[in-house]
Image (cartoon, rainbow, N blue to C red; front, side, top):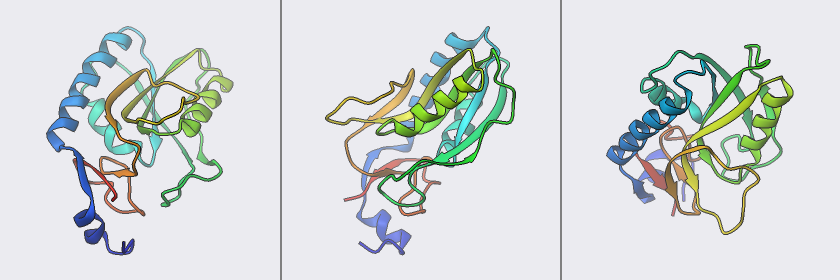
Length: 179
């Protein structure tokens, strides 16, 4: 597989969820999240960079006042295997005694999402919830469970909707898997 040829990556990939399925899942998540937080005035924190596509679409579905911030912590750095967690940016808003909703693209192994949740709690958050566009089905348990999940994917490397394949294709409206 030529990882430097983005079209080749897409041509060899398998469609996992159509753009329509993704949009339907985001709409349902918007309803579910609104029911949970309509009176909470939470801080919504986008997990960069993969969470940006999902967060942008989810935010327009939320019918309650919120503040928006972001965190940037990554284990992948355009690779398909995670390494040590690198903190590039912490939240800028004061999380003290606030309800936080983390918004991320995927719950894979759960290591990054757990670390971000723990960091938010250490920064004084009262409660920390998480919403992910997709959760990868794995044969073992994860250290964290997302509170809101849009779709499930098999245990394969997936991309699109904010997730990349070797740095490419975060902009796709559907979700694909590498062969």
